[in-house]
Image (cartoon, rainbow, N blue to C red; front, side, top):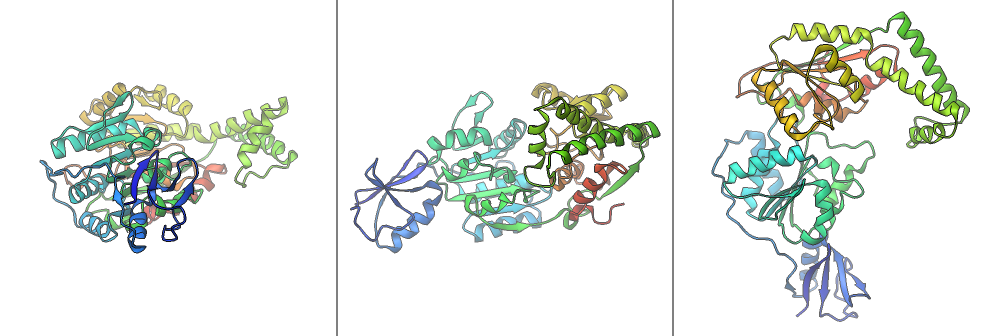
Length: 459
């Protein structure tokens, strides 16, 4: 009888003649191993195809377990969470669920794990999120949970890992899990991260995200890697009943006369260099070309300094800092997060208002202490650059002040999501302030990111 095995992220079909015309086309002959080979991600498809061709195989590929995934702590599911899991089940346990930050995507995953009762690997983008998943799964199911990454390597029927560790180890672990859960799954289509899905034979796959679309369009790859989008709800559909009521307020500020003169001068220098070298900043590689050209001459390095200075003036205009002071006073007693585009501006704010700061350089223990201080009221506000954009649970925050950011819709929906969780199911209104310097590139970036449904009815 032909045998099907898992080998280094692929499926090997052996003990069948090379000339056998029944072998499905998704298998290709491999001279090195003298066997037919198919990608591991096609495991389910391969089994169906073999069955249709009347080929019975000894399936030795899968090594995952059936285990009693019975929660010892159970939360009542919200209607849309039930709907999401139902839709996922109807698509044979494969697909992406899109829900706003704070809507309980992790609970959807817990329900899916309980439904399938298969060894499960949860993949998250950061160690902070790995820690949160570890705590959630350990306390929910009352079992030991494995961790891969951050110095840990323990593989158990319920295991959590980062995207970085997943693609490094899936070649060897790709048969060990029957269910893959990809948190913040918009990361998965990256060139290397895709391997975490492609080298696994897991028949069941669940993707979770609040911001599915990628600027490079690679989110369409998720159909192959996980499955199609099976359920979707936007912020506007859930605010009030399940998320905090919220408003987004755009505040436009002006540069001072001196700032405006310097800004326009530096921007002119930068654009003159771009035009002189025939670069098109709107193209895919436009800014990359600018960086390459800027490094080759003194004129180019001056243009780079000009580019950075005009951004610095827009990001941290003196009128912005004055308005931040006003907002901190206005929302005194309300836990507040101030977001910036870069670390330099974040440190400037922290010094100016004597606030704790979290950047990618902040140690995990210190980060936890700062977030605990925000929760307890020890700190009324904290400053961060981009590290709190994604995934990290900051349940206590109800005010977000975006001092500066990119034109990314994803980034700003994520930042809004940091303040949308209801606190103990109590009604609490959240607010996001977006500070924009007029007559700079910030104005256009603000217009682009506000095209999202989350900004409907904002002012």
